[in-house]
Amino acid sequence: MLNYQKIFKKNPYSLIIKQKEQFFSKQLLQLTKFHYKNCKVYKKFLDFINFGFNNDLSLDELPFFTTRIFKDYDLISVKKNKIKKILSSSGTTSSSVSKIFLDSLNSLNQVKVLSKILSSFIGNKRLPLLIIDSKKTITDRKFFNARGAAILGFSIFGKNITYALDDNMNLNIEKVMNFLKKNNYKVFIFGFTSIIWSYFILKLIEKKIYLKLDNSILIHGGGWKKLENLKISNHKFRQTIKKYCNIIKVHNYYGMVEQTGTIFIECEYENLHASIFSEILIRRTDLSLSRLREKGLVQLMSLIPSSYPGHNILTEDYGEIIGIDDCKCGRLGKYFKIYGRITKSEVRGCSDAYQ
Image (cartoon, rainbow, N blue to C red; front, side, top):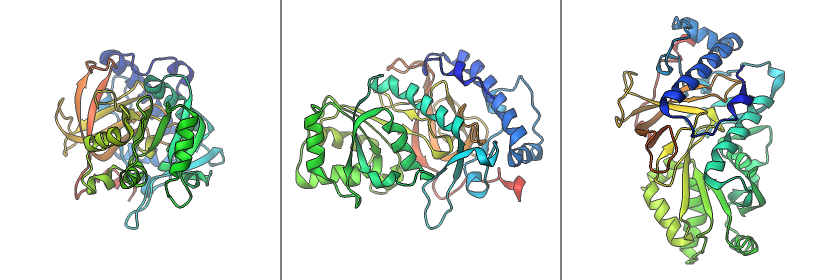
């Protein structure tokens, strides 16, 4: 198992790419070995592809799953009686959901990593928190979906927590206004992007309400597919937020339930950043590595998944690495853009070993 206590002492954006590659590849290889020894399905997969462990392997040579595998199999690297929480992805009537099994250590490390990353954007001081959602979303503490897990995760870093929506997802504007006045309009606002747009912003537009939240910060993520269908871009979202809420500090984040906690947050220049706890690669459709500024399939790596083998996954998202170590915001490491899901296709093949 990794020495997480030592890892968490590092600043999340403090290593130049050469330093990070040396540090991260060593840790990820160790995590790969751990899951190989403790997860039967993962071992079967590595044996099927004849993977050979070698300490000189680079990041791009380490084995990865597709996210689809989490919908087909229960992947666990600890004893079942150690599992404290099960996360699920958002599902539809035409697809099953991913199931992620968490023990106490994995859950605790998710919180620690999220805290380290978030402090780079909102500071270490807890702010009054307005959640644009219904408290009903977090009712089931045993079986969470990604939305509920995100709300609980971010709630830890706020105080005087208030939910803007009632149990029927209706905006309680009087409750919101009282909360803002009580906290001098300097608050931390969090929610899923599609929820904020559909149940908060559109209501402000409908009622012609303009808020003065220039001292506040908004962090949002998830639900972009719904907004893409409505032709709402990130730029339009930000501009509308500015018009009706006067919020300047708006940060989108990218992540998925398979690697909860190790999110990628958008900086002041609208670039998503990889911290030292995570990494990103871009691959062509033939799975060869893309060049810098070449769009392709997004591969995500994380040091946090320890109770399940979600440390190295190929997503169905389309993205592009914009630069390395030279973002104007000053954060070191890779920074990138995500352009959405692959249209009318799925990344297949990596689960063939289990048929």
